[in-house]
Image (cartoon, rainbow, N blue to C red; front, side, top):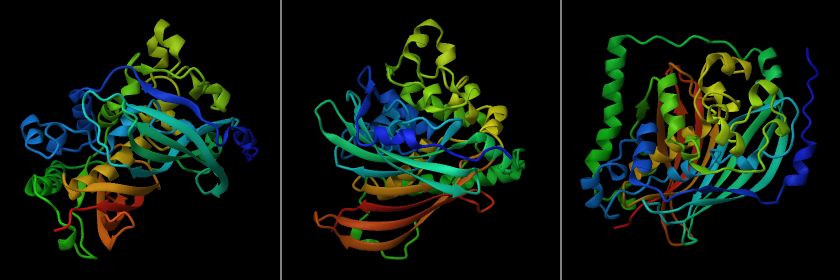
Length: 388
């Protein structure tokens, strides 16, 4: 058994101090929004179909509420990954979102101010001593309007301990018959049809009852192809697509040599962008290459935490409709989406209230599972709906 210590003491000097912000180079385009919803498996016509969007209250294509994280240069994790933890790796642990009202449209130029928040070390069955680190992201448009606040949780752990503790079971993708796949397509369309049925209509707060079940959303099976499509929808994955940080040194954060690399290095990107592309080299390649997934303690290729957060927000926003809005969501990730698995989202209304701002709020309890019933994520969220 290897030495099982996890030294997190270097984090303390960073807490509460702003770090370099995330910056887009160019204003957003409608195709950036379309690419995002396509990658997130979210066929809400407000976000990609011109005619439907033009007839909406927004007068044109609008970004989904999940989109701010696509404008960041690190999935929102930058302020929750500061300080050196020797021989460590990172996965996402959750996100808490607050939405402040303004929406994102083509032509907007989004930036993100970032401040490390706190951390705690706990013993886990996954990797022994594990650091749960949090950091805050504040997303603004070019007018200075605050769009959203994201408190991101990173899980930093020693990959060698994760490998030793037996996390590598189920290394083979499950197999699906043609009949099962056809049934999945039917189930997927049930949720899509629920959005079509609502159309431009209003889901009134008055009509929603405690105990109501939201439509079940199914998608997958996930694959290396689908995960790659997700990765490429994040704007920072495009060569020279964003202003790169100059203070990011992955090796200095304690990542092992095999996983550190030069991902997002602004100087190397000019010389050899292949070496800076996280799809191929660096800590992100564990998502797309089974060999490197196993290296960081995962049984096979796996999905992105920020995508999982987007799936939750999209699911809730799709139910709320264009006249509703997710105002707060607190999501905890229990395990990633692995290749070959499907993702099943469902939620129940657990409360109704009018908050101190006079908003008509529905609170929901959300669960995400795979086909085996294994819990992937949970969330509590507040959704504002129109009142009659």
